[in-house]
Structures are given as C-alpha cells and as structure tokens.
Image 1: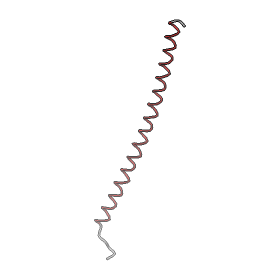
Image 2 (image 1 turned 90 degrees about the horizontal axis):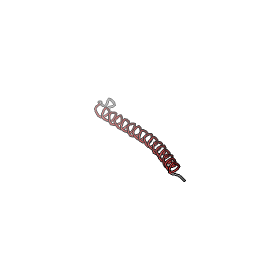
Image 3 (image 1 turned 30 degrees about the vertical axis):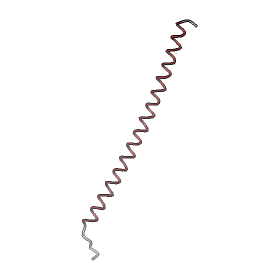
Image 4 (image 1 turned 60 degrees about the horizontal axis):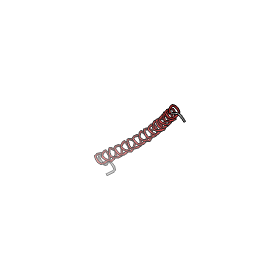
Length: 64
C-alpha cells in the first residue's frame, strides 16, 4: 500500500467519524429539546395549579 492509499484511507476514516459525530450531535440536540419541552410543560401545569389554589383560597365561600 502506497502513501497515497494510506492518506486516502485515513481521510475516509475521518470523514466517517465526522458524519457519526454530527449524527450523534443532532440526536442529542433533539433529546435535549424534548426534555426542555417536558420540563416547561410541567412548570406551566404547576403554576396553573398554584394559581387555582390561590384563587380558591381568596374567593369568599358563598355556601355559608
């Protein structure tokens, strides 16, 4: 195997590794966005629940 072949093989290996890392990065970014959306939704639900509880506590009880 000549030097040209060695360089070509190494170049192909680097390209393959770069493609794999790029794919892993995209997958990781997608997982991160999903996690952010879930935690944001949970915060929204929690704040709505707290607002409802506060509103119920402050409203006069007309059943008395």
